[in-house]
Amino acid sequence: MAFLCFGGDRYWPMTSKVGLLRAPLSKVARRMVTLGRGSPWSLREFDNLDNAMAGLAPFRFCAKQARFAVSTAGSEWVVVLDASFPGGDIKGFMSDRAQLDLRCEFVAVEWMPKSTKSLASATFVHYKPGESGLKLFSRPRHIDRRWVQTSDQDGRWEFDASGDPQPYEEFDKYEVRRKAERLPLDLLGRYLAAVGIPVDKDGWLSGPVIAAIREPFGGNDQQWSSVVELRRLCGYPEDRIPTDLVRL
Image 1 (tube, rainbow, N blue to C red):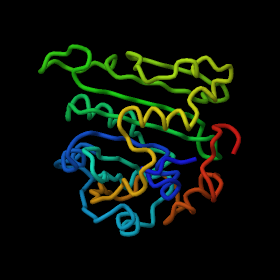
Image 2 (cartoon, rainbow, N blue to C red):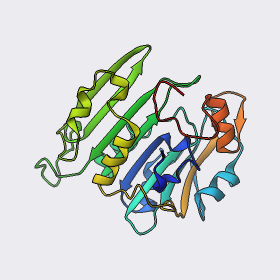
Image 3 (spheres, helix red, strand yellow):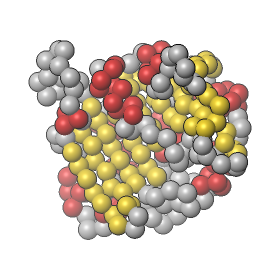
Image 4 (spheres, one colour):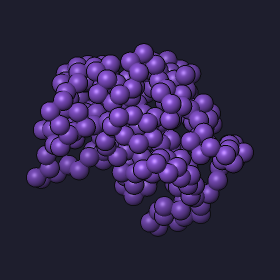
């Protein structure tokens, strides 16, 4: 199973960490990294995600090197992806940018099955400005953001939820005995659909794309130029997206 709106398995596992912001592409691009005097980051435009990835490859594995803001077909959503997978922080950093800078609706999903390079986790984040009675110029609070996550913490699974529960949530799933099964992939898809993301729409990531790029920082000497190569480096199957966080 895969969400067709994110290219299905075409870009996975880079789409294992996805941030969505309901804001103009140019504004999102300026906020997805730290820009300005002395910043190592610069912005570059491409027609679509395929051209952006091909134009910037090869990528150093796990290095801070490229982040993509991708416009979508027929909607106000902009999707943010990071080439540093399994590193890179989208759900936290971009959620803060949505709340503190852009004041826009934000959604994030994370589906990271256990691999040789990362611990397993599944996350859903949703923030809508002004939903909790905030005044126009007041500072947003993290309590106004709904965050649900199940994660492997060095061999011990933990389930956490913060913020106000949303009416579309399936709360019975949070009571499943095995914590690794409390946020299954199909449930994340239903949550995305509930907030207006067309999970069954192929070609939704239409472009154009603004990429934030820099000289590779961190990571190691291994490189990848295609998602198949990235899957190999992560230890994931080459032909499918695992639907179990623990068993590949």
